[in-house]
Image (tube, rainbow over all chains, first blue to last red; front, side, top):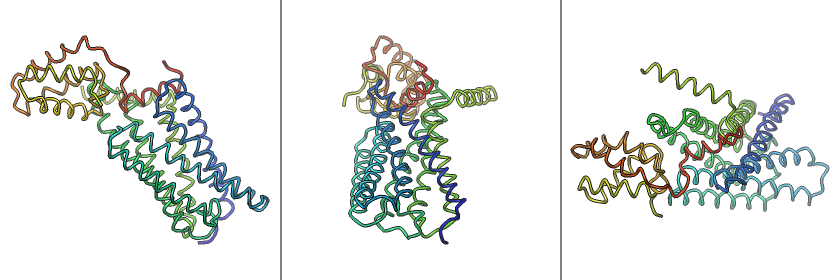
Length: 255
Length: 106
């Protein structure tokens, strides 16, 4: 269970870059939309996705330049990385709460995950763990890294569960003409995509003691993440036509 | 947080026509809205009207209300002139807004 070979490392890099670039593009579009609408869901999701892209870029940079940069610069990179990942959690949690209903229990759960995530990232920053100590450094993750990964998984897992739960309601809304089939399908895509991202987060947090299967899982997960982001937040015309046509077919079969 | 004008009007009318308690009427209407992912405080006129016309009658019948269909038709008609206080803010509307922006649809 040593380091993955070069080819797998390259695959991880391609997967991470694809996911980060997609998040950057989709996030920037959401921020542009938020500038016009002044609405929190698109603003928070936009911030979360842009922060995700930044965090990935910092992780790649710090890995590539680790032996070249002075300690101060590496420390700054590590701080930026942890800050960016905190922003990802904050953005996605605010999006979940604002989209699926600002209830007291959702606000309390969201605040708890955010506070726990920030606290554990501060602990990581104050320790001597490398910026992206897991999963490819070979060393087993520290308890703090494990907890950080789990709070991240919880962020995605919660969002996925809410989206799948709402998908059932949206289907009923579609049957009485209050939702389009395309919108209904995007709740399902978000649910499945976010739950797979939660699984990836858990794998990434524990990957120090695992090996090639996790690396393959991370790559495929990163690609699923990219596809999810596009279908949910920037649905292409072809996807919408496909979903509409399939819904029309099903409706015709029922008649 | 106050409920939307359409919800308020529909609830008042339903309470008046059915003779049921205010809390029961509003609770029933809230449940029916929630079953399709909508909230009383943000539901628009069109949403309340659709839910009243398509779903409420069954719910009222299950609670022993007689002439539920006729009652729902009257409640629906009563909210025709209600002005929405703003755009809907349900998850469905958020996803519609984000989807429209993807290709510049208005």
